Length: 359
Image (cartoon, rainbow, N blue to C red):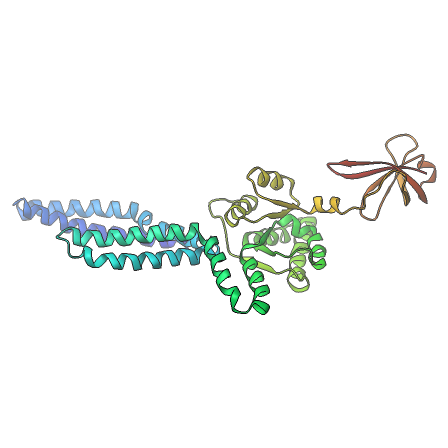
């Protein structure tokens, strides 16, 4: 569809510019007092050919492509920044209108040029100022609304203020993982979970995969997202915001997180590192799981089932309910039995927490 519109714009541009330059060529021949039958036709045909070529080559760069860029930039822009942009342009037009009356009294060509130049300058200045200070304006507006009914409106104002700015971007991996649903049900997450459309497309692509394992993972992710919207108290929003200058979903998430100033929730190790290098806050479900595991000290007793042999001679290995590995000295002789053990050492590694114990 986009290529067809661009081709049509090339044809229209070629016809318009060819006609314009043909007329200019004929008028130029008349101004130089040349033979209209000989030079007028030659200048007109030459101008028409030149206009057709230039119009066909450069019309999309002056019409379709700038419009598409502006449309994509506006669709990816957060609502509050878009409102700030429109407010800045509106204020710029008001200021330009005040200057237009005295500027129109100047002699030509200043009275034709300066009002338009002033309007463009004030619109640009107003838009830049409003977009740079939109957070201050939001806080100022919030302070104005609060005194009306402090006992009722104040809590609602805080929630409304957070709904647009306090968001967490969800990655594909954390949706497929599924633990975000259990965390959301507990009520610990207060911010809005934001799911861009390109993450949904990636989930759908995984769900349509020919590989059964990937297909099941994708369908699980879609089911988790549906349950998040219907069963979790955490608000979940789907957004059309995009980063068209990048292709892969991870890069788009990083660009959106920088634009919105919000964290990314993910289990992807590479995305975690890239986001941290760019100063973006990362909420990793694996780090949270390790942080909330029970803290055990040497000398405490546990009850664990020894299910397999350890790497060292005589060792047995069991697991706690949260997945923590317990290495039991001389546990091989009680394999497949549940025994009481005493903690001797707790080791925190990059892969998680390991507990060493003895019978």
